[in-house]
Length: 255
Image (cartoon, rainbow, N blue to C red; front, top):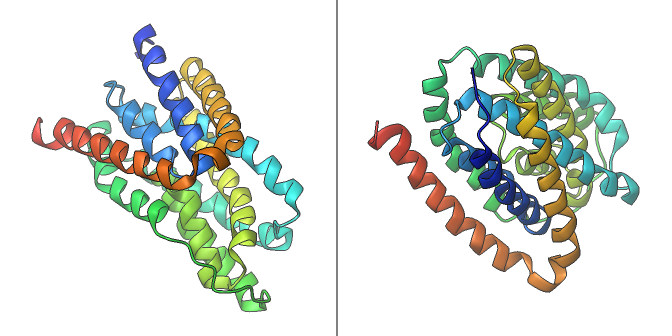
């Protein structure tokens, strides 16, 4: 039975605040949250489930601004949502088949993949009209595959969605970014439902972490122009490097 220690709460609140701040300015904040959570010694399956609760609330808060922008392609969203939910459900069920000791090692192996998706430059190749193949073939396929990744691991999902929707369907990056938020929220919710069903969510910890994450997002969105995404990305790169080598030692070298 997991006992919630005060030191874990106090240690993770600023981490999730910083993750929200970084995410709103440069993206990739989610790559810090789960790895830092793992370093507290919490069981990896509980880390993924509880982190998913915070991710749901954070994504929902940012989706509001995108919905107001009028850039989201709701026709694409309606077609892709069932596949996104199915993919996230399957991904979460698969990760829970692993022993918790191996989940931590899998997270370490997948972390560079999420980093690559987040830090890779995104160049707009121009906006094209959404074709029937793009809508009815590539959109569900993208949602199914990335939904599975989100349920199985998670960090970097938003970037994967943006890149895949832009490259596979030809829609502009801004439209892909706005629509990706809808899919990302759906995959988070689908995955969270499975984690809750199997008792893998620590609500007493997840709710305050989610609030800290939202607060970081709000402050970051206000200071983005003053600070600049370039500086935040450099900080993110250093933080991720430290986290990665700490986790590598914890789950591989120090095992």
